[in-house]
Image (cartoon, rainbow, N blue to C red; front, side, top):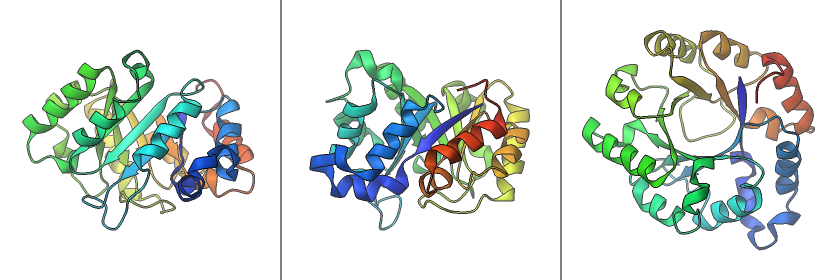
Length: 241
């Protein structure tokens, strides 16, 4: 059982202080949490308005600065919430060296692609570049969109437990059913969940079959983020990162 830290709540300050990012309070908090050794990865929610209306989060230059500062300490997970992810991937390749790409996973959103063939092409493109590949499914979307062929071509699935595109939402009971159903159909595939995770819902998702938990506001909005992280680690068990 592992925790991936969503830094969406910190994006605004990090973008504002981009030229002196190390001075940002949120940067220092990320550093503290990373150095705790209790995180599996940093989760970066890259949003563009063609998919998430009215939202542009994590410009390329900010991703680059975060990568340069943290890649030697922790793996990255980049959730590509946009309609043409390959355009951004080409730009990521300019600063993520091939020999470092095994520490970076890219998550494509299933709803972006109209055909299985198209998404398979994108997944193969990612994996051939050396990245790990994840496939995200939004909360309202049916599990029927995750076919056996698609699942065989990803390292893990990311099941949204809230509607994607906004932090601080409440975990949906509908998500628990979807996690359990997917886990029964694909017991060997790693399930990651994202949205509304706290000390209660993390147990609910765990019991349903989730293995990795993307946690944002429960930690980042806490006055003591490290204590909040420790509490979650205690809830799910200390033996896994």
